[in-house]
Image (cartoon, rainbow, N blue to C red; front, side, top):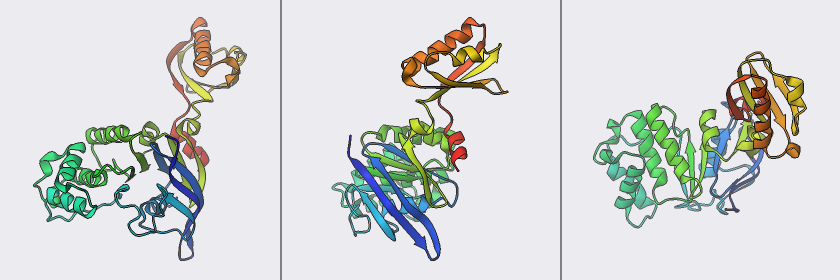
Length: 303
């Protein structure tokens, strides 16, 4: 897919004298899983809320599937939303609640849509349960089910796995993977490892400003460096640096060899193989090889 699903251009949002989002611009392409990253107070939730149409920009332009979210009804059946702190009416049975929401969305068969959405999040057994009887994790998944009803082309998820046990969180991540390519998914989260695993691209915000917007490969330098965890042996740094395609090589005290490379020495896998081959020939024992750096390291460097 080549079109942009979401476009922000110089978007600004103020709350009194405080500027929560300051002239932020980035685009989300159709079919991408896109991450919103930033510390508390970075402007993530405000940006997310403007994409949903919950808040309106004070300046700049924002389009979701070509529509202005500030126009009443513009995002109906186009966008599904999981707010971070979604609260379900405790007395309502889950099936009745989801069916009601599906009817409000104008879906052709509300009960069927509700049941299919519950199946997607693995909770068909909650159909007759009152929402107040659900655990935190179950309530989170029911809220996610309402975001998926009608298969909206854009799905916005705020902290989708926060508070879930590891097994359920893994199932939610797999659900997000399954949506990639068929839906445009935006995930706002503090879980950087999760975003690195799921997202094709990301925007990093800090104190209301856009620090960078880039593909995940660019953020983690997967096309520019790799790391070798050395178990034992003497690493011949001068010889590594002399290999074709290697721009720089450093060895830290923990035994991690970081090699920065370019394409003059061939494809990345050729440079990696050449480097590992040299180390093996010099009887250096290797624990592992990884491309790029952790997203967490990059975020800490930039903020």
